[in-house]
Structure formats: structure tokens, C-alpha cells
Length: 362
View 1 (cartoon, rainbow, N blue to C red):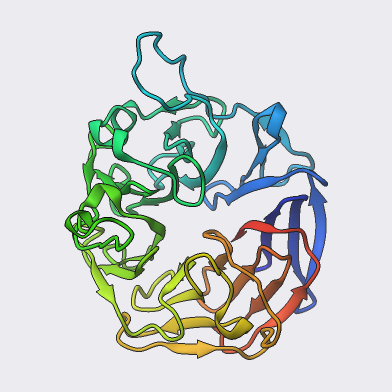
View 2 (cartoon, rainbow, N blue to C red):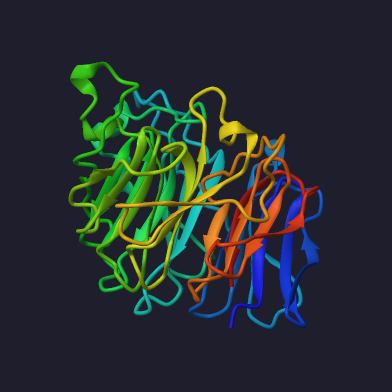
């Protein structure tokens, strides 16, 4: 039963609880501090919160199931940069942009994607971390560039529920990469995507793509969805190749995407106007939903602000619960909405929260 969700914001981590059939904002942790990412691990009930404290650096905390307090744990960190390195990138974690838990056969394994483009893996629930050197040392990394930030970053981590060693990551801007051996080796996996912001002769290059978010369904793991800078793409073979979806209403630009946990044909998006505008079409907030793999879409508006609305939903600002019906969405201007009927209607949880970076159930 879906009874709890988390809202990571610029001024703390808010707990959302369902009590007496009604969702209400509950306790807040790290009040006043920017929480960039929250991850609820269903394997053991632990919750992870990543903080970006500016001058004091990136911090990571964990709250175990049944625990009363959060415990600070080790944050991912790069090794010392070799003195003779020609790499212009500063080897310092600027931001934890994504987190994912490993497979059921890998208790304790947690993945973290960071700016400037590093992927980290922990085998002990975040007590220690290792940089995935094979991806960091890929020659193609020299061509990655920032998409939304000054440096590239890993915002999506998809672990194949059938094989924990099979992992796909999304990079802005560096395309999609896949490993079949738990991270020992990697290969580009963005075939079919197109970057119209590049010179025409380079638009199809896999290493310059800007996938804004890539997610999949545990029940139909081959089916992945990508909200790209230039549209929406879908894969039916865990990212081996991608096909553009052109039927999206209003706009095919946006950042967030959520996928039904057992039906990979059903997905939700938060469309916006590109590029510099980045507001909802006609200043009216809409969620678009497909239930047939992208052949058709429905624009869902009931309960969402339809006038003078300038909310943008970040990459991790839209989530669907395990029941496939309960959705949570939050925006850069502090709006929080919840639906319990697959998006057909929404109710406002808050219109005055701090800017929201990430939401999740669990």
C-alpha cells in the first residue's frame, strides 16, 4: 500500500504521509538545507538523502527502516587528480544528481551519478564508494559537455531487474551508456537519438546526445523511455536502439518522465516550451500520458493550474508509485500535486513549497 513519499527541496526534505485516506505534509529533515536527491530502497527500507551545501561540499545521509534519526554516511569523492593529467575537468563532486539501488541479489549495492559526469558504486549501503573508473576513463568523456549545468552529469541510472550487472546510465550531455558486466566495461547505447542543437553532420552521434531523463518499468524491463532535449524516445531492447515518438501533445520538450511499474507502454511526461522559455505551454500545467507505447497521448489537466502557471518540473520531479495509479509531481516554483487515478485528476498538496529537485515514493 502506498502511504509515504519524499520531497527533496532547496530548503529541506519533506515527508508526505497518507493518513485516514488523505495525503498531508509530515516531518521535515535538514530544514533550510538544499537536498538534491532522495532515494528510498525497498530492499531494506532505508532512505538516502544527498545534500549540496556549497562551501561545505556534498553530504550524504541515510535513515534506516524504523530508525528515528538520520545518520551521515560517506559521500562519493573522486580520487586525487594525477599531476600530469591533461583533463580540464575539476575532479570534485559538485552535485549528486541521481541515485539507484542495485538488484535483489546485491544487498547493499547503491549507485550514484554526479556532476561532473562520474558514476560511483557502493557495496555497503553508502558507507564507502568507488568511482567507476572504466566509464570515467572512457576516451569519449573528453567530448561530454554540460546540459543545464556547466559540466556534464549523470542523471539516470537504470538497473536491469533480470540481471544486476546490466546497467544503463543517461548523461547530459554524453548520451546513454550500458554495461553488461557490472561496470567493468561500457559501450555507447544512444543509437537512434538525434541532437538538433549540433551541426547537422553530428546530430546522430551517440556521444553528444542530451537525454534529460531515462526510466524503465520493472515488470517490462526491456522497455525504456527517454525524455530528450529534442523529443521523446522509446526503446524496446533496454537501450540497444531508440525510436522517436512523435505523437506527444502540446510539446515534446520537457525533463521528467515516469513509467508504469508493470506496463512499459504506459508513461507520463511533463511537457514544457523549449528552449529558453521553459514554462508550460500557454502557462497552463499539463501532464501527458500514453498507454499504448507512444502511439497516442492524452493531455491531463484536471486539478492542475491552468492560468498564469510558470512551473517547471525537473528531471526527478515526477514519480509513480508501485500501484501504477498514484503519481506525485513537484515544481521549481514550489507546487506539489498528487493523483490517485493515474493522472486523470490531481489535487494540490502545496503551492508554496521551496523549489523541488526530486520526489519518490517509499
